[in-house]
Length: 288
Ligand SMILES: [Zn+2]
Ligand SMILES: [Zn+2]
Image (cartoon, rainbow, N blue to C red; front, side, top):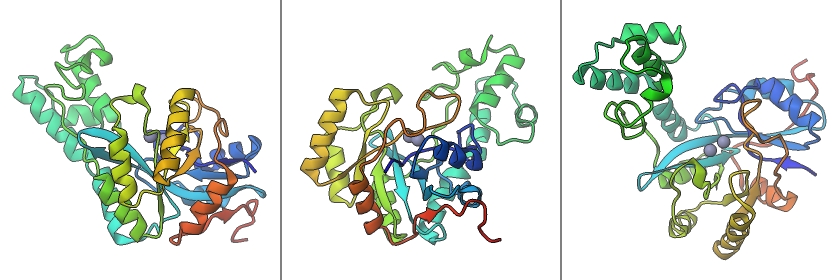
């Protein structure tokens, strides 16, 4: 049985639609795939409708959190998507985008840049306004030569002069909310140092004591020594150890099913979850 518990679709920053993703998962020989878009469950319905026979979908999301100033991601599986507490937290993260863009534009104006919201919204072309659009506006105004020159400490880089922090959830609160919604939490790529700062093992122990269910061990951003260390840590703390591709489609390097989760670990996840059940594929006959 081949199980991949971490993938992204166009519902967040992946390049495959949810339907393409489940078809790709079946073609890659997977038996079970989890759809875990960033801070949203928007792709689930399309994935369920398109789910091929022989493939089971685990519904989930990857929730953006911050712990002691370090950005961390929590995978949440099989929670009730309508549970109000968790829903409110996901909306807080998502709805933060527009006010945050306004605040960055205000900071740029304070720095003497004649940028306007209308100009940036025009560049976004009706899409949701983000930092790359503000960067393009700075290029258009001749403030910087290129978009990458805008992502510097002088302008829009994390911690830069015109940067505004994202709303990110407290992982302890997320563990509590996911549990209250009947779901299971797994700390995604906890030692992926190339993505930025990581948290110490003591923080993982604190999260485990607060009810964290598992850690993602087998992941492309963990080298073999790191995986061995994390397997040991999971054993020590009584955490489940998962493996997954963190597939994003064509613009990232990991293929569906490149890393997988042990069937026994998967069995334990579904035993613990009470908010939703895995969905077996009906081959497009659902609702017919
Ligand atoms: Zn992540
Ligand atoms: Zn991810």
